[in-house]
Length: 157
Image (tube, rainbow, N blue to C red; front, side):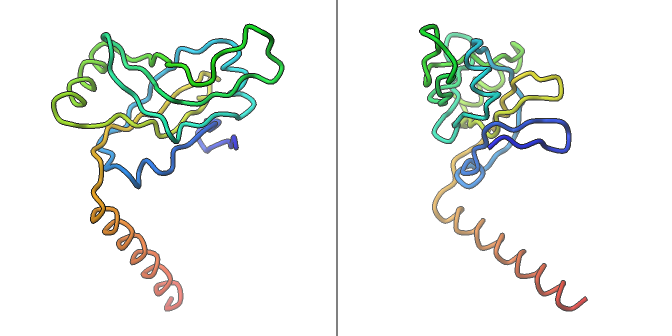
């Protein structure tokens, strides 16, 4: 699934449902604390962050339920696929995000897992609030109307 984007990022995994399920207020880039076999498995393009979320615990933010399958050429020292992974952020960012989650009812949702231009694994986290069913319908209606508008404009001119 890995694809090279315009700015030199190699996208490994993407959570497309996140923007459908949440109003994303802010996007934050975080590093990941990974083991060697996890990095190698990511380089193979194998990861799934669709069911995962981030949670503040013990003064740090942790990525929970992200699936990085075992490295195919790994030995008995291979990693556990769904273990908790610590996210690397500045103390101020951790404090601000933790406050938003605890006080304001926001959710930290992983949006993309990628390698940046320097080859370092990064996670794009979205700070958002959950959408209600009518919000989802409204978003879909707006998207469909914009597509229809584009079609009409193309046909006319």
